[in-house]
Length: 254
Length: 254
DNA sequence: CAGTGGTCTAGACCACAGG
DNA sequence: CTGTGGTCTAGACCACTGG
Image (cartoon, rainbow over all chains, first blue to last red; front, side, top):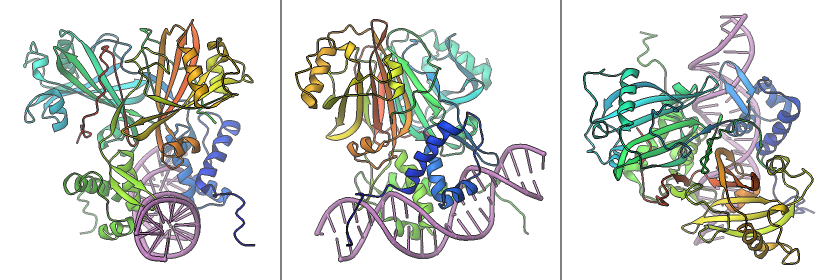
């Protein structure tokens, strides 16, 4: 006989494993429950640990699992919906803002940032560090770049750095007229500093949201926010309604 | 000597490798150029192939590399910006639409979809399959779910399925008054069928954009679009301006 | 066909959390 | 300290692309 090929191609083991585990998660586990450890799971399914890990990795990427070194693997709650972008035509730091200023300092930004802002690459700009939390969990870390020209009324003596200074900078920013914002979302991996704030390992997948704040025909501020890709769903709407979904599942299609 | 620990913690090898490779890509390679194969790279850096692959995986995730089985690893062009969502207050299928209808059939949707649409879980809905390309490359695959009640004028005899039917359904949809849309972006992994259309392997990272089209106080249609996460940057703006960025770099911050 | 990336194994050691 | 997930190795075989 020989070449009688019943199935065209064999499904990769880790792919099949992922499916099986996914169904088991739906039926036999509840949110927060800890799974057996990787060595036992691998043995139970008769695969090498590396293969089992490949399946777990995918499930974590899809927000189904939460793995912590030294602790274990637990079933993750549904992703939290975080509103981003267009529903609020406001500057960062507006009263309705959900971000918490952490720090502020004058710094020479990366070249790409300087180019977008239209400043000289050697110029320092106000760099505000902010953190966003949801349900007590950190979901995003942000760097906000604000050229000195966007906050002319700022007194240098106010405070050299720190959260107080950050608030002062944001307060000054409100005085400008906001014409609009442009945002982009892309996949990235967490830098070491962001990873620390987000309670993840460096390299963890994140959704990078880059936002340009426009005023007077130029980019008055630039925000680069990194959201935890495993726990967040970024929401935006155009109908003026604010509406933050927070409810639930909508598991991906079969 | 002994425990003199110069650095607090050793950086993982693959992380360091990724940095080195990233810099090499910036300085010594140009877009489209093929890298040495994995076995040679691993040998050159003195690591196991699996470790080298971990670094390549991250770089591919960040859109820096493109790997194709049987071909090789090449330097990827900058991510293409694709406009999504709020700049066009239009139904899918409107004249300005960038999507290409591929097929259409009546099908019982996943339970979560039925729940969002407010239809019975056993009811069939029009399911339109669409494809989005940019520069000749496929960037996204979409499933559009449209309850029969949203397209009452549709004649059943028109065509049983196919692209023609898809266009007919979308044409009917334009008759409704669109009140707004709500979208969400999250990270996912490509299903087998999407992966095929996007020229990727199953499980490849994708940005899943879920959009509810609102009319008459209910969800008149639901779109689930999966974008290639490695090659796409999703853009949206709120200032009425359409503006599709397409230019360039803005490499992530240092 | 030869060469590429993709999958898989069986082991080892490390870093971290918690008792 | 024990147990967890994270890193790393050296090898094997498979699936695909292209000449």
